[in-house]
Length: 478
Image (cartoon, rainbow, N blue to C red; front, side, top):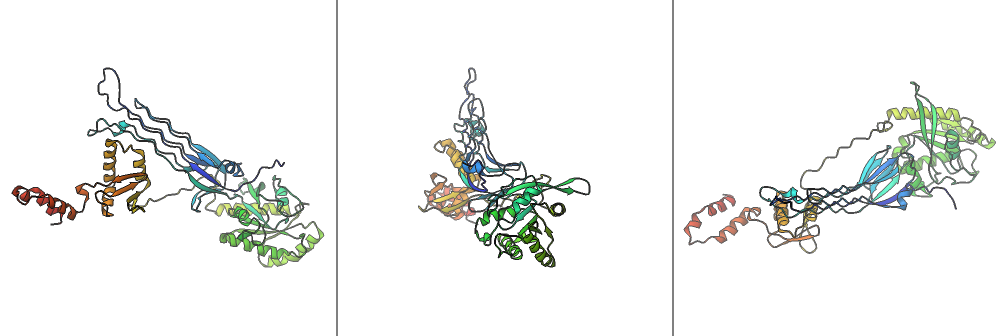
């Protein structure tokens, strides 16, 4: 059985934050302290699921083997105003270059620097103890909040190798041999196509800057491409995404291929066509051509034939041999110059480890919406409103009154009236169903006037002349 570590660059992950702890509803009980009042503590917050980019990790294999990750639940509050403990976060390390998306493809995070963090699932809020609900009108609250429940969600993780130079070419063009000679990487090298099935990274010292600081270049040996790779032929999309982040593309052309009908010029045209078909922005990258295997007589003859034609087309061409080492020093230092220049002009470079600042503007207006469900009931949908209902023990009359006031202050009651809800209609919020009972002030002025007018006794001169009639007429828009 092989001891090689399996390379996984794409996998789903199912994440769920920890549930918040319940708040406590308790009363202070001590001798010589009558009517001690509420003293229930708050529940602890549930733990988050956090993805952290880690240098040195090269595969998503651990996540594929264990795709379900969950934060710890928060502890419950208790008497004497003791708060529950916060749940521990579930920290999941991923390789640098991991892209996080929803299952429908929406981008959530791009982890490009060592230590960069992304909260994939937030833990639930801890419920407030009854101490939090005490005020001058509600001196002895006998209810507390439950901890917030959170739902599991599925995300998609894709790894895009981060390198300065990406070596692209047909199978058996000699890319792995070049990386092994230019760096300390030791990819598998065999004398048949498709030896390399996973990207390999190698670090290459490529000279010094004018100030004397060294130029270290990361090389990526990308598995061999074939015609039709952008359409998924071979392992097209899986390999092509690993060149998206490379600053310099190094086209490795085989001057002594196994197939005598192969032409390096045709190979180059096919490679560029597949790259641009995958991502048009790749056409703007710095590109260099390497004619490999010039140590062989046939390779030398082919290089002498195609080099002038490539140079006439404007290509920068290097003739090298990964076996004998011919031309590698010139290639090494030129790649160092190109990478240093690309780093200086690339505004998205993250060599200093600074994370980009992202400002998200929240949309104005209510964070909920009102519609009708299949049964005809009015449904209020919105995370904040649903959380209020889920966290309160609505079978407790005091808690129900508190919730009613909270919904009125948030404008939910008025919005329901505007949507057509009237007394006795069913309202669904989360998993709870209510009978709608709006107060008189929530109704439109015309309906208020009509209701009030029906309560008047025409034979009672005090009611006809009283403030009620005047108020009703004024509310009708006098």
